[in-house]
Image 1 (cartoon, rainbow, N blue to C red):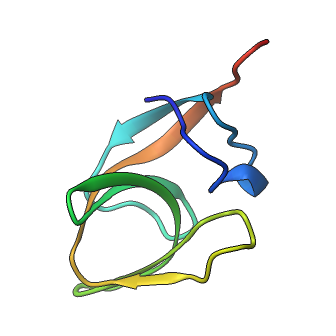
Image 2 (cartoon, rainbow, N blue to C red):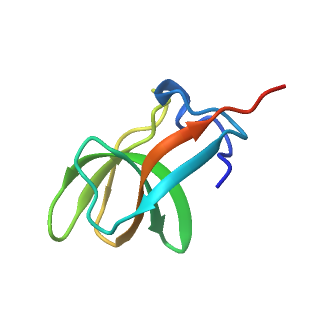
Length: 85
């Protein structure tokens, strides 16, 4: 899937980079994931994961960490394919 926006810029993910994920519903803490929140797929880093909730972070130093109780993990980042100009 192509990245959109600058929410993960400090993780080295830029707008229009292609992201490759391995499918998992149980990612490792510290990994970058695609997660469905309220029907929208977003890319975030997993800071903490418990049975009923998770703490997720955008890697842009502009947004506070997000505590979610109703999310579905879709996959864990495997590689980033950089967009060339």
